[in-house]
Image (cartoon, rainbow, N blue to C red):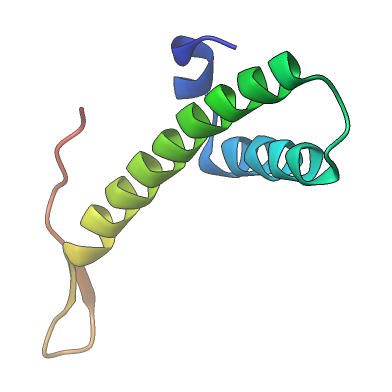
Length: 79
């Protein structure tokens, strides 16, 4: 799986794939080369999930509660 394919995944999709890789690696079955490839993919998925979480945190940090109880949000920059 290429970086661009991983970048196209939602957080939930990437997390599900990462969880599957962890299960496979924990089982200890399979060849060493396959485990190394899975580990590399897992590392890319982990970085992707961390970036998605950072984006979400930045959006949440910009949400505030006004004195009248209404919710306001500052515009977020889209990268």
